[in-house]
Amino acid sequence: MSHLLLTSTVVSALLSSALSAQIDERGALQITYQDEAAARNALVPGYGRGTAMVDLDNDGRLDLIVTMSEMQDTFLRQKADGTFENMNVAWGIPATLDRGWGVLAADFDNDGDRDVYFPTGGFSGAQANTILRNDLNTTGTFTDMTANSGDAPLDTFATFGGTVLDYDNDGDLDIFVSNNGVAVGGPVHNILLRNDGNFVFTDVSAAAGITHLGDYRHCSSGDVDNDGFVDIFVGNYVGGNLLYHNNGDGTFTDTAIFSGVADPNKNFGGVLIDFNNDGWLDLFGARYQFTGNYPSGLYINNGDGTFRDVRRAARMTRQQDMGHNCSDLNADGYPDIYIGTGHPNVKDLDVIKLIRPTPSGGLMSLNIGATSGLHALGETRSHGAAFGDINRDGYNDIYVNNGGPAFVPSSWQENSLFISDGNANNWIQVEPIGVISNKSAVGVRMMALTGDDVKVFRLNTVGRGFCNTDSPIAHFGLGPANRVQDFVMRWPSGIEQTYLDLPTLEAHKIYETGFTWSGTPAVGATINLEAFGVPNGTVTLFHSDVAGVTRDRAQGGTVRMGGTITFEPPFALGADGKVSTTFTIPNDPNLSGKTLYLQAKVEDSAGVHPLTLTHNVELVIP
Image (cartoon, rainbow, N blue to C red; front, side, top):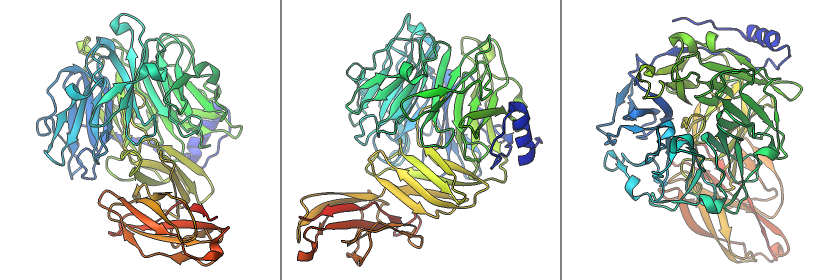
């Protein structure tokens, strides 16, 4: 199959003529795909719903979880040759013909592998959700924990969507699910499940203020106001959307009307993502719209708690948005939009919208579905879409889960695995791994500053669009830039890490690294330290009583002190990446009344992961 590969000049001309506006042509390259589902043994025909693209067995290759309505969900393991094999029997997956509606794959017990939660019910009525513990590293199978998971089954609800978040910043992952009202006879509220450990979840919805009634579809989570607490967007099919602001005390307040994203009726969900790379999460709102001229929603975050609706200026279009998700598909640094369309009785062509910022501070879109190869199968009924680099060539691929509802047998369809052909844009990939934050690093914010001073922001999430789980390996398209001068990570724990000149065209695995302290600083006093980073790594503390900032490219980070620097003897982190130790402040009377700046260098003993210069702490000596 051959596709049209457009040059930057041609694409820019198309954008300008189609949208009657000028854009920054930096990295504005087309992208094309080949459907390799059959060749890679990943067709999985049926009545498709949400999809996950994650590494389930920790072999370094992305696997697939394909959910089906009224059929058994399918676990596909990627083999070394890039093809897939069905692991349902070998991995002990329950042979349940459920009404699966999506899949949340995350490390709920922080043991280093991804567990799985299946929201079920959807249009088909109430059914218990399922949660599986990943025991592949011990027994070689998954263990069904549903019966012992507290309130997690929610068997009186018809769950439509879900998203994973650490809403209380306690280091383990909680679950928010959005529920369908029509399927159970009337309006319902959504559910917030607090993770209490050992796969026991408690419904805290009422206490948290998650009580608004509606007929909800899908949801997305992210820190909308950059206050360090994760917020939640929920699409409402009958009535206004919800934007739950996390108050930081275990409660939420719906701010959708104030924020300007309520947009009543026909809402199928949304994705919180930073479209214009200004450091604030914007919003794509999916709308299941058959008639009229009311396009899908596109909102820019104003940074003051409100959003502005730019859908018409951005030339967004009307279609039957069901499947939806966002990712940077052409590696220009800006997230794009995938929209799966259709109806139980009607198929349609899916849509890819390339999104670009405008000089005036807006956004614009161009549908490249036809030229990308996405329409090779013709019209579909498309739902789940998960993104990730299946073949590890540096570009995002797409697994699309097709098929209508099981109560319309003729809506059965085969799926697609669209492998990207790539283009001339550069990239970098980062897989974040939490140590004191949740192991899946859900909620970590990352920023790459390119050599030409362009910022690219990414947020690590689980559960967005049609209840999909994307690859946990964050993809940063760099456009024509061939250098990342700064790479900054902000973890849910509040820890920040900065790397200088992180190599491009490579995939990096980066552990949450730093230290916390307790005690009373004084001349000659000993304080307690909790250090963390790459497992079995080496930590070297250093300190000075002189302030300063030096960008040390040889060390790949920033030394946050000046003057004469003293280095302490190194010590080792444990196999879990943690260690408790002490630090004795020098018994030097000249330190009295000064500030001692303390920092650490953390090195991987195997030399695989990048050296990290941690944040520093300021010890005020009386």
